[in-house]
Length: 270
Image (tube, rainbow, N blue to C red; front, side):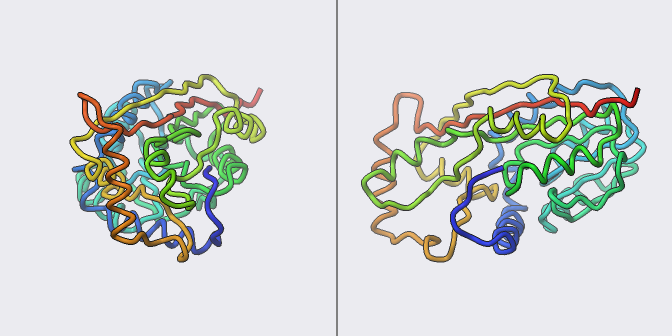
């Protein structure tokens, strides 16, 4: 779902899992933006009951309790690429009935065809590399008549960070996310029927540039790049913070996101 720097798929996936492993214990304390998006996505659920629910990229399991309460599933699957995120989710919901934690890649789901009534995912699918592979997999595991409901970051997210780096170096410091039109095309090609789509600009405010950056690092969401671009000198980092500070207004230091909210459905067999 995102356009990455020049980095192999295997290396990227390993870095991604490690990044979220490290963030597993700090995630909930810094996930204010993620909670806003999750609440909005949960309000878009198009069904009131589902036998098998897959929470794709469950993270620390913030959605699991509400999905279980609202949908009363017989099987509640929490899937994530990060083992440590799943450990936190399992600890958090040890009393949740019918919970199954699965460590796997969203682009290679270890499930049978037509097995899920609902695939739910909040701010996770943007970490996938091949949108066509992803949506083909989501179509494959969704039952006929079942739903795919997700949110993802879209093109134009976090421009404040890019702006602050202008003139300091020529490296990429923010992922290039897919435009919503391209995203919708991939959904349609997969065979899923698009029921609704929204593109929202969500603006967060912070007390300092450091706090804005921590809101990314502490949830595992900072840039994954090749080794040649993985470090920034202290001098350049201080220069970046000074430039970012210039964007402050009376509300604080801004960090904005473009978020796509999608509800799709696998056609029912006639």
